[in-house]
Image 1 (tube, protein in one colour):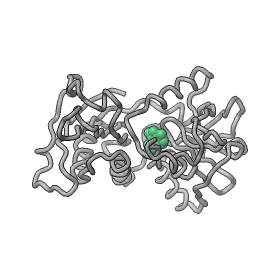
Image 2: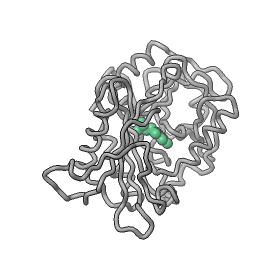
Image 3: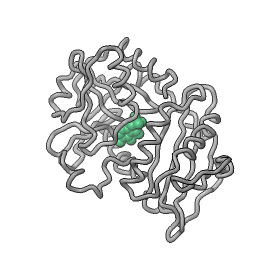
Length: 294
Ligand code: PLP
């Protein structure tokens, strides 16, 4: 991913209006230092973010991402984001992504230690090439997430439904997957239910029904999964949120990891055992995901 553009945002209060939102943005050199050493995002990973896929300059599912940004801010006791301001920042950043696939990142941090306001910025980058993952599929291993399916209700301070900047654990899980000769991981709750991947949601197929883990089980509610469920329903398929035992994943007719930038990656191997990949059907899902979506 090559960073092309960065925008520092002077965050407005949620209900504040201004005639020209562009006066609240400052474009900065994406290769130059822009944060102070007291930043709590860098010291503690204390903040939230969104990664928005951009196709041909069009940012995908912006409202769903902004809704999740607001949701994450609430869970983390951060000041409520001004949605109009962030929407305008997305438009500016997306226009810098170039012609192909790109990614706009939005970051809202708790700010500088003892400082008065949060720090906010947006970046635009070209996306990596995910053709192989989308067409050939990926090998996945299951990894223990270390908490039970009811952990979010008992321990909301784990911030399990928020997209926080604290991704060190997710990255460690990916490295463990690579050590086990796989491309990605699916987290399992300690009581044996499937959750999500370190950077993607899981969808599995049972006949004409598509199922995903219920978001109250300590996972992020994925915007790509939401968008695909709408699309699948429009094609006449059933969709459902369930608490899914790992054996259901092993018995699935097919399964995908889905996310905003890689899009739908079919799982071709689970814990060393081959899983069916329907290449034509997966291509139809990715065609949809690459079409302009709002
Ligand atoms: N779950 C986790 C932990 C993620 O990090 C992501 C995306 O980065 C997702 C799910 C998928 O979310 P989305 O489809 O909105 O990209």
